[in-house]
Length: 324
Ligand code: SAM
Figure (cartoon, protein in one colour):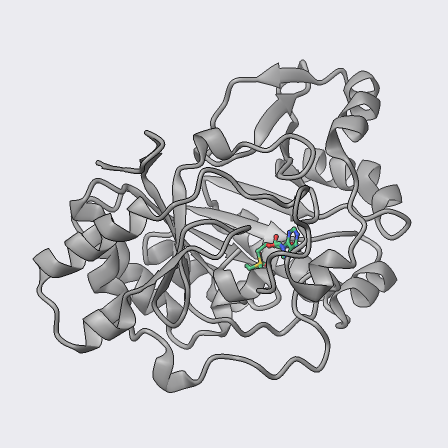
């Protein structure tokens, strides 16, 4: 097992297969942004597979494909199929904005993707258009319907509530999730890059105080993927709410993850700069043992915690660059 200087076990790798996205969410990639990674610097599928295989040999069991928008990377199901066939890869999941999910959901399921998270900040078309810069709600709903029909293990909706923008949409989202059997996860906006730093998110502790009596929510011990969300459920078990609170109650003491970006950089923390570049090693023909040693050395760099509250201007990367 990989463990860091603070005794945390690192058993989860998020893999960004592209830093590009077809949406421009107001808290993520700025409109007009041009600084995307050049294709020659993207890890190839073989290089990603080598890194995943090395993590798996070191005890990592759970992997998530993300981005940018991962479905923009051509032939993603082929990558998913080779990753899920690797010894030790027990759980392969995907985060997507779902604009292209209807076309790819079946191929992804066949390729071994079991769980899907979909970002959706509102059920009002005009609100989605204003947040994402694209009239995308119809495509997202159709992607969700296809994924539901195919039957992924758990479909989670990720929503970033923002003051005065979509905070009035939370109850409608709860009702939608109850109707379709989706798990709703609310995420506090993080000050990542200029976009994140200008976003006014909601304090989810305060929101919980309002939702708890309204829906009779009870704390749930479910780990549901082993991430940082803390879960609540309705007494009838028909609805599960997850809260991800990097700002109001951070969870760094139990952080179990690192992130591989499209250019082969391992980022140790969303909110800090510690990183380790694997691409030069991979392209210099390193051995498996050298790759494993590099991963162990990288994990040594993992910082104790992020400092989103203390130093909100610190992180200049947008979430899409690290692989959110
Ligand atoms: N495109 C995929 C998607 O939409 O899920 C994966 C990448 S996206 C960057 C992953 C998640 O990061 C989304 O749920 C998005 O809402 C979230 N995100 C992006 N920027 C954020 C920020 N500044 N604060 C909090 N969440 C953010």
